[in-house]
Image 1 (cartoon, rainbow, N blue to C red):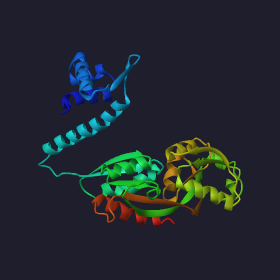
Image 2 (cartoon, rainbow, N blue to C red):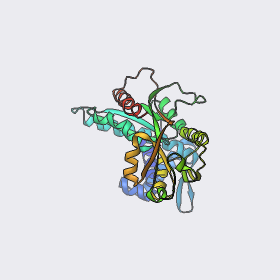
Image 3 (cartoon, rainbow, N blue to C red):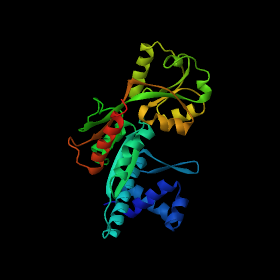
Image 4 (spheres, helix red, strand yellow):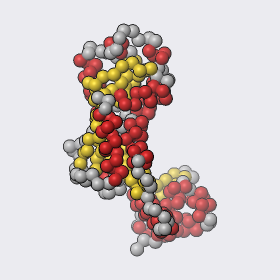
Length: 299
């Protein structure tokens, strides 16, 4: 059986970035840690670190071992915390993944009811691409995935996509950009600097079709997968952005932007993906109920 003390030393070195730093955290000598790492390498039959100059870098196997070690010691910490708090009310742990193209403000509003309306909930949020998060969901490391699309047809995950609701889209821009536009919405977008959502987003395709339908030809100055980055560029006066209508006032206030207009022809859909057909997790049930009232009311 693997020696977990050796594994713990390896984990600390990977986390701290060096043997010296790990030795200081563990209050042992660097020589002691080096010796334990050698024993672990011998036991596993491969090297977990490689030396690049004066730095240690994880090998491919080292990255895999680190993933397992992180899970092991995370569970160990959770076990210790639970044992120490047996006499207290145990929190309902809610692990959720948010697909990286979902606007952060939307994710915040969708998830907030799980904390506001339920007592003693401990939410653990992760962000990533949809394939990565669905893999975690399949392994039961997540209770829910918030996405702008249902489970892709080419992904072999036994899960269910529960619609949270839909909403229209709004256009916003910095006052300096608005001053240079002419005409009424939506034709004042024609020739204007546009900050497009990235190709991985569902709304981008609808947005381009809407431009063609209305014979609008904006000047594309940037394309972004990250909605937070689009807002930063819009705040700097670099172009016009599009956002889900329910958060238009919030985005305008936070980013010092002016609201140009809305359309219900560019629809944002949001989904709660779970491995259950019938939702039973209390936090998930609260999120789905609140989301439908909030989102569908804006279409």
